[in-house]
Length: 326
Ligand code: ACO
Picture 1: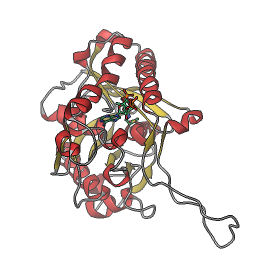
Picture 2: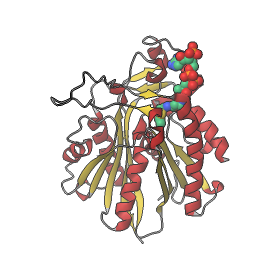
Picture 3: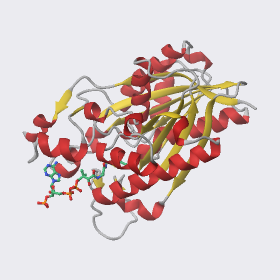
Picture 4: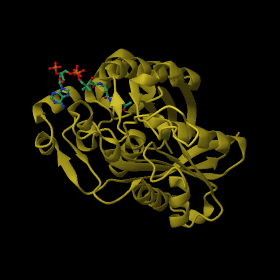
């Protein structure tokens, strides 16, 4: 059987650092409130680069780390809820800039679970024999969909991109198990409107659209804690492994208190959960790719280490992947 292995990771963060104190000069908040409720100390905010720019740089770095050229890519998937445009997709823009001439390319919308869903799709293509080498990117410029007058949301998010390159292997390694699930009945927990239905044939007056993220914070919190535990159990069972076999859990970086409670709930030591949300805030589809690249750079991962990637986000979507690191 063919397996999908991770052969490279990459990330790109905008240079501009915005601290909690910087935000306190825009909305009524404080470093103490943000830190104690979320664990976030600062985030990166783009002042020029759009999603495709960050995605391209993260993708290029992942290819460099993998030691391959863009010409071998069969597919590029970009997970994002903040594309530069509806059309062309960010993935097509990245394909052009990388010069990945033989690759197919498309965007995927699964909010903060985007990279995990993208990796699951890529793994399925590889296992089926359809493709050999796939670049999956999670990239966001959430700063453009923030209501910067709403202290309840604008303190939580940041901009950035993370990427992984997956490649087929005949060895039993790489992606060992996956689980994906969605619950559309909870769609009002997190939302971000697109364009209103307005055309010359629509009779009734204006439809007001607010192009910002809105959120039921406490509902998301409860959903996240329960879901992280459920998904960890699912991928462990599918891979016939136990909690003790796991070296790291890389959970979506939304809130430190979510990670703390999820660790307790799952019966996994908190220090096995990688955390960098203090530096970048919640970058939605990008968080897990950014974390993986940092871990890779810090040489935290050895061949044979078992790690779990687990995401949750608007939709509500959620998914996990158990990786046997190579
Ligand atoms: N600074 C100061 N005060 C604030 C701020 C802020 N940034 N934001 C809200 N408050 C105030 C509220 O106005 C409220 O004041 P009031 O009591 O006078 O009305 C008070 O703090 C409590 O507000 P809550 O919203 O009830 O605060 P809560 O304790 O629930 O914490 C938080 C809010 C941190 C968002 C929490 O609900 C949470 O962590 N939820 C998880 C959501 C999350 O992480 N989302 C990320 C995106 S989702 C995703 O990635 C999938």
